[in-house]
Image 1 (spheres, rainbow, N blue to C red):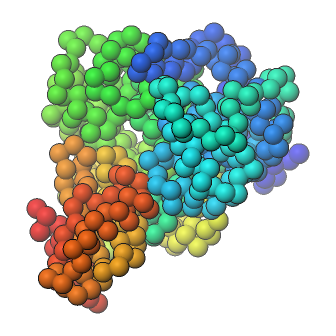
Image 2 (cartoon, rainbow, N blue to C red):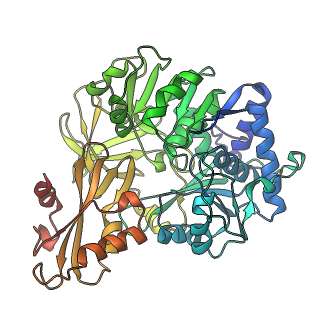
Length: 528
């Protein structure tokens, strides 16, 4: 069958390839080399070679097909970091189903939205979340539950009786599904916070995933001998593409931990001789509070900023980067082999077009701060689309085809770029993107609330946390005595825990800007 790329005469970098090809190729040329090492907190680490992992993926893909999952259908993967999360992702992708990875800190209302919006036919989860999935994803044909909670024996009472055991999904890998190779076929979905009340579903193609694997590996100078320590959540682009897929591309090794643990970081790094990690300032701040080994095997770390002076204590070169779920990899990246400007996020990556303009669309001068946009190829270097949301997809690009990121950056004299702020009213809470409007639309439904405005407050560990200013219907003096508790209860019910406000402030009025909009910059000054 002739695909669209060859039909038009344009040959893309992944013509004739897809994600199953990449895993199969690695299993053939590095069959016995460790690919994934699962390092739970309270048990011995377990290693999967490329060959063994490829066989297990085939067996699971065959089992999913036997249970009626068809190409083009969506499967919810609601798992903390574990080997089963990776087996499920690759098995769906091999079958031609679309793997939907969701944040395990999501509240019931969010999980219900994810499943209904994508039309998931099945779900794979763990004991701690089985009730949540069963009670809120009512249109599933079936769900399966793994045997543990990120390496921990589950507490009693979580497993839903009608759920299947994950281990029983596996069939004979000889019967693994076969389908036509199409790099433009849909591969996976991640839900990401936007400025509207509902997260948007970012759809990747197989070419997107391969792009992430190849370009991330190049940006990070990864090689077959590297060991990538991974503890950021695998349901996000960072760990999935920056760490795991990039390791797969070069035939390296990826060590998976359940989550970040400052007390276990260095011991795992030493045991597996880790050379690379993708990290965030929160993690580095926590590691500063512990003893740093005089000798270790790390050669590079990647984070939000280049060479932050407080973290020189680790004795590792730290390259900065900027990227989004929609960009698959880094649109801005630090230099591996050259000096970087400390506290910058890097320079424009060679694979993209980066534009920084003022509010009138004019290029800014060095030293100024402007709006960041990025140009690439949808379905290859940029996401394919926002699933079931043609309007949002269309409106996320400007007339010149640049993706509007909503971030503001400062251009430096030497071409380096520093991060400025988020023009789209976004917060960054411990590495998670949070839309202020998503929180506000929950709070405004609480009886007694007339108006609500959420802003970010600086936090020493989490970077930012949400704080809400509320004008009660009858004024502060006449506000219901339970209003604070009612607001917090509504947020805990409808939102992931990291989106729940850290403070609720009742006010009789708020500062206003043009057209009576709340002047959030003034509210932030009040917090400072």
